[in-house]
Image (cartoon, rainbow, N blue to C red; front, side, top):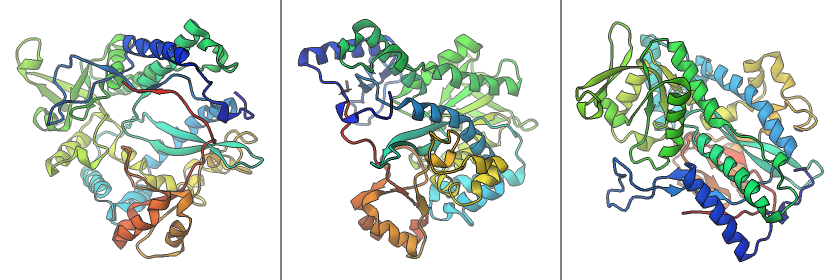
Length: 456
């Protein structure tokens, strides 16, 4: 689609019969092709059965979302730049200590961030044994419509460095949309619904290839990849598709464990720092305990304080970090994904620090991704740090609250503070807690756009 697209015309209007027909096509395809969740638990303890017997389709949209081709291609071009940028951030110890540390950075105010940083600092002092990191990143964007002559622009919501989920499910959602187009022509509901406007999505193979490259770089025959997962995970199929891809395309086996399970099963070989996992006899084909060396640790957990209900869980996380296994992500790469880093990168000279002379080119001219398609700064909204006192920028957050969002340092959803709720929230914070938050201008999405969303 083009920038002149009328977003208020989306989604196309459907009769009840047409809506039912497309919903049937979408849900049956999703159920047949692994676009799935585990259903909510009915138990008082909210636990999932160890062996699931039912599944539901994931929440889905009947139509793909309209997105201007120019901005879509700009996001694709910029991804490699962002990958390099955040890799360099993770390797700049001084910068991370200053921005995220518990002595001088946001870790003073955010206990979770501070605990992770202190663990990393302790590991550094004893010697990091694995210099390689693996990053499987996801840069989230929205369209920003300020209603002026510049029209729509691409704006980054956040950059995810840990547990970047929904890659495999998004691939299956894209395939579902192409199937509906092929089988129904979307009932000729819109001239924009043509095959050339449905981009290919091969996320699963790309993510698995990254994990396989880390595994091969580790170089131990018979080693396995460890998926660190949350207990009672409902989004399990998004993870399982990567597991199947690793086995079928790369002949690499995966072990799935929670932090609680790893507290029992994980250990380090003292002479080499190799990480080994001992599985009980009930999980072994030989009915005997089996021990496997781990090449790569893929974290789909440990990104939120609720993943660490007791100090011993941090001990397990740091044991994994001390190992020779390649981490996805390592602790510095996880810290690099903090919102404070996102804000710090917008300060004068910081991008140039990480990207050298190229940094200036990536911020050239007006913030226009069409005229300057490699303009990384054009994807940034205004943002700034809050502080203990009530300096001008904290007062600005109060005064401009209707156009702002406050964000803490971690991911997981449901923890931001928006617009009119900001002044009262600032009043509720102790002075020292303000440093854990950043203020960011709201991305104003195109007006009037809608969608048909289907939940099980």
